[in-house]
Amino acid sequence: MFGINGPEFLLLLIIGVLVIGPSRLPEYTQKLANLVKEVRRMASGAREQIKEEVGIDIDEVDWKKYDPRQYDPRRIIKEALLDDDTKPVSAGAPAAAAAAVAAESAPHPPARVVERLAEGEAAPFDSEAT
Image 1 (cartoon, rainbow, N blue to C red):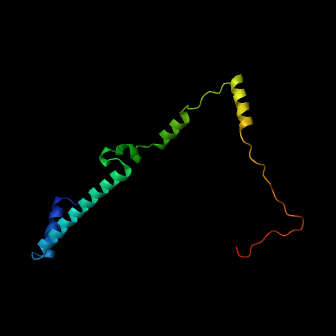
Image 2: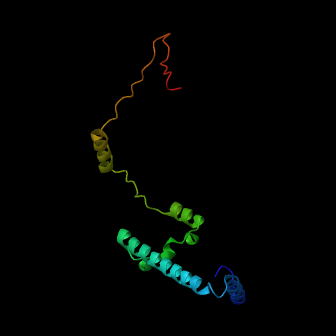
Image 3: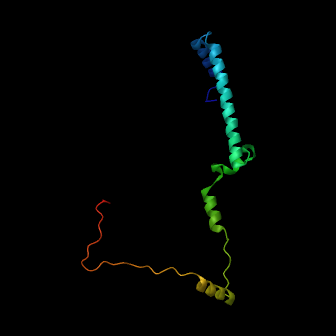
């Protein structure tokens, strides 16, 4: 708990009791109890809201799967490079015929039109844009 061990916590508690004093101690303990109750209520409300919006229960999530420490970039790159997910290309006639049909049926992009200024014509200039 914040790097505080048992004897240090007792010492802080005794100093707190002496500083606050016996007359105001019940008031502050009640405020502390209310604060703890409010924090618990907010945490359970957040849990319910996440369950409603996402549709999963937080307790059912496998958090180890999302731990960034488990990812080794070298392993991921090695697996990606060695992964053989490409299908072998056959040099047969059916593949060539299918490629020719696909090339003919594919829409061709329109030719790019380049507008050129006439010799000696000034480039358009927008004085409001600069």
